[in-house]
Length: 596
Ligand code: FEO
Ligand code: CA
Ligand code: CA
Ligand code: CA
Image (cartoon, rainbow, N blue to C red; front, side, top):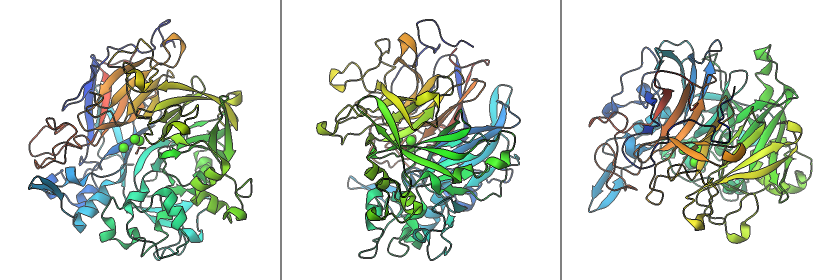
């Protein structure tokens, strides 16, 4: 099928006007319908959302907060009936709890959270698995879906793979070092070819408070990951988040979690073979040799791009044979060389510097301290790796590098070519021999982001890109069935850009390469996550995350806004309803494929 007009953009739609206001906007001729909001029912017995009287018990039966990754697992191969899997990355208590924030004498004050509020936060984290169905062209939730499930920060999980059971993972509550309560800060993720749901644990450091005992052996490890950051108040009520009381607990987060969605009682598995970093996501593809390759970004300034290649091969005829494939394989960190080649460096205990001499006694140590292992191997320090998506149509891999304003001129390299990189860039990888499992490849910069009309920015959008079409801060992305790249952003929401975040269609082929067009934009304060195109190309799901953040909160006492004069109560626009993160289904009015 030919989706590309000769010589021009591969995307046929009329661009949205960039800008900032309280609502979301999609290209003309398309419908953007809110499918699931924070607090929406997921089960027949879910209590109605009552934001002024929210409870943890209710929240555990409702859609969680700050939807990020969106995946779709078809039922019977359908693009009109399947399981939507959605991560709930984090919570914004100032937007969730009425009256929490007050202003007195011009000073903004946020009250400490109660135990009940912390319990709501924990229940609003994690993920949602919910059956959805398209009826008369419109998506709806199936509340009696047999697989519907909420996963939260208190769902029991199992550590598996080489680090499971290691002494460094043992706590006073878990002498086995293999049983963890909950998952934290699930950012992006993936869906495996065998229909499991991957939740990547990203900024886990923010949940921990307190001080390690003097001279504790994990001190250097935790420093490398920024633990503790004390962004959350959970340690006030739960000792496991207090380093002085439970010093090993942070080693049990920062993993890739795999959930078997077809067994709602299944214990999610933290797959330690894929390393412990601030995992952005885990998009994946079956290589031509049958091994499965997951691309992994570690979202921190000067951290690394990784990939994991399974030891075993995918068995399309026997689902059960694949369910533990992620426990065995090789984790690699990327070295982007100045000559445009790429080397994948194995993080394997006993090889190169990953030995006892450097403090590694086992593969478990290499995985628990993945970052230090990659430091020693000489991987390339990147400008915050976010989503990395393999493209099954053109065989390439797209790496979103969101920004890095701390990179100094003397730290520039060809893979991170700008100092004070405020707007980020996108790298395109071609693995050698067209094999995603290859240990070497080539790379080039597809796009340097930012406003091309400001020369100092050094952006590289094509000249066909309009004033609406440029963006900064690429974060999540999706490749549609025609192999076209769609990029969602995080961070345009400020006066300098004059635009909110959104979803941009980015050409990668031919003369139109590096042309970008705005397809959808979010309400003020939000970032856009998720984007996902279904196999029939007739639906795009997007996740509007933290709308209104930086704006008024719903009790009328806001934190300072990026736009003092603007705020939003999207998507309900009702005075008794808070602003709510939500997943939106985008379809062509009257049906049909998107952007053709
Ligand atoms: Fe949760 Fe890297 O974004
Ligand atoms: Ca986010
Ligand atoms: Ca992200
Ligand atoms: Ca981001």
